Amino acid sequence: MNCPYCAYDDSRVLDSRDVDEGIRRRRQCLSCESRFTTYERILPVSLFVMKKDNRRELFDRQKVLNGIRKACEKRPLPADTVDKLADDIESELYRLGRAEVASRLVGDMVMRRLRDLDHIAYIRFASVYREFTDITALKEEVDTLLDNKAQSIPSTAQLPLMPDEELEVVTGQRRRNRR
Image (cartoon, rainbow, N blue to C red; front, top):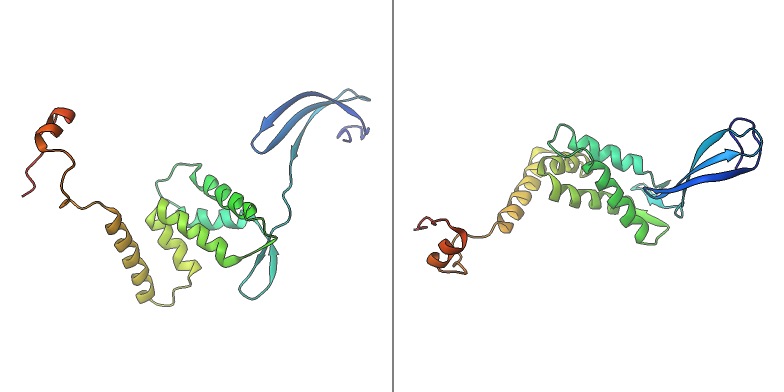
């Protein structure tokens, strides 16, 4: 490690700490005695993305992050949600253990996570990613989203697990008659 002040090639480590996905080291130059900080990270193997036109590009986390940020713009989401989403996608891609992935796979990962996170962000991302050519295609996507949401909501016609009297004792609340 060369000193950033005098370019001497030796230093000693004063302090090491784990940060995010690496190590932060506080160093002191053995020549000029200046102190400086270095960060060490493990660089994963290169991951290439195969585009629709068969071009190969090096995976760029920032591109994924920018796409998600655009979709989530002005949405009521916690600040770190977008970064966490991009981190999850990047981690999953590297866990696949492949040197090359299709851009479609990356887009589908983003779509799946946005659908669970925020429906408006999902539709925004889908409108660009799926390249909707008319309003009918967009409407079909929204209808599919609404159908999936309706299926995930439990039916009120289902029989209760406990009789109303026992439920009142447990919860301390009276239930309305659902007839």
